[in-house]
Image 1 (cartoon, helix red, strand yellow):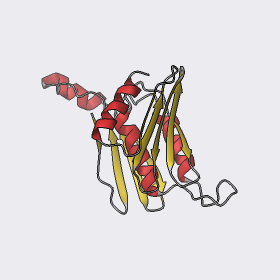
Image 2 (cartoon, helix red, strand yellow; image 1 turned 90 degrees about the vertical axis):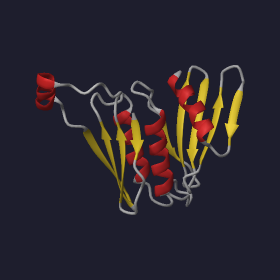
Image 3 (cartoon, one colour; image 1 turned 60 degrees about the horizontal axis):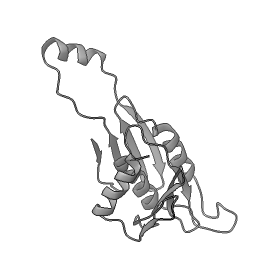
Amino acid sequence: MTTVAPRTESSAVLALSSTIASPPVGEQARSALLTDKPPIQARLCLPGGDVLIEAQRPEPTWLYATLHAFKRVAELKDGWDGYGNSAPTDEAIFRALATVVNLLGQESPSPEVVATSSGAVQLEWHEGGMDLEIVASRAGVLSAYHSLADGTDWEVDRVGPVELRRLAAILRAL
């Protein structure tokens, strides 16, 4: 189960957790308390505040590579490309990261995380002739594009709950 806490001016928490099992009882509970490892924590520093990411063990296979890519994007400054383009906004970075947390499963492939010239953040997966791109705009609005090797494609300018379910299904199939 994955939850995303609302973002405040100073901080936000994105929590990743694996499937919830029945709680242990008796001696099993006491043993679990002594042997359970604490969650993994990572902090992504944004100008408007920090984002704390917590992941239960075992951590998702995509976690470290994806967080490293978000860190690189978050460190960009205006003019990062030499042409005076805008650095990604906090809203774009947070929304893209929250989207990854909400859509990816334990074994999902890592997305490419790239800044766009408009200050948005784009998530990309290119697998076996399939392309999926999700863009979090400067204001944090999501759009998506999906194409298959046979030329079939799907595009939406404003991702809502129905489209999020479709995107989750696409990513589960990778």
